Length: 254
Image (tube, rainbow, N blue to C red; front, side, top):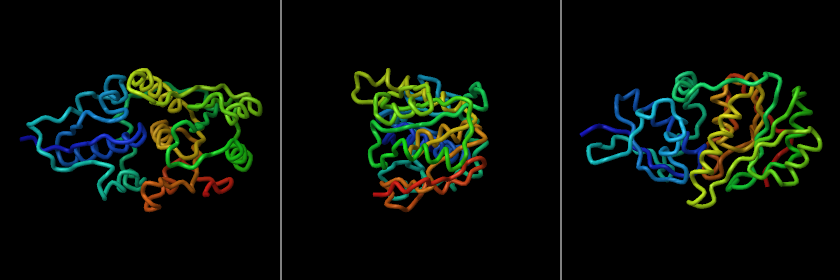
């Protein structure tokens, strides 16, 4: 039997990147195989198919030859460790090697991620929060790009009107028939954010990971942010990585 780290895929794309990175680090340190259950809303099968991971052979589908040594599952009590940013502080350079490199854009351009469509338990972040963030922090940019899953929303329109922002529309996985198309679009948008030197986002593990893997010199995020499903135990807003700047233009707590 092969000693293995087993990932049970759950939740969305950003959450599953936490599962993958955590599992990959443990498997390399222990010399165990990294395997997955092949199920999930947008699982590693898609990450491999669309070239999200650098080496598709580093994660396999679990079979009868694998003996579970560690189970990575968001439904388990210790899942809180997955989204603890402090657990990854010493592995940032290593984690970046898990993913393919990408070309970089003009360093003076800014990308903003506005997540609305499937925000789930996260708090809605209005245009005014981003505008105040830009003003308060004197964020300078030559051109703005907006990545959003709701390009026709009033908030997206405000970005266009106020900043002449170019909008990139992310896909939301709504049903199985659109799954492949949606995942492909998500991958494109994720890697698009990674190309920027200046990134602004609020409550999203999707953009948190894109920022971590970007190498950007200016990363602005909501330092009040804590995933609701952990009941305040962990704040991704506590991220203190190089070039990350936690901001709170005004409280989003309800």
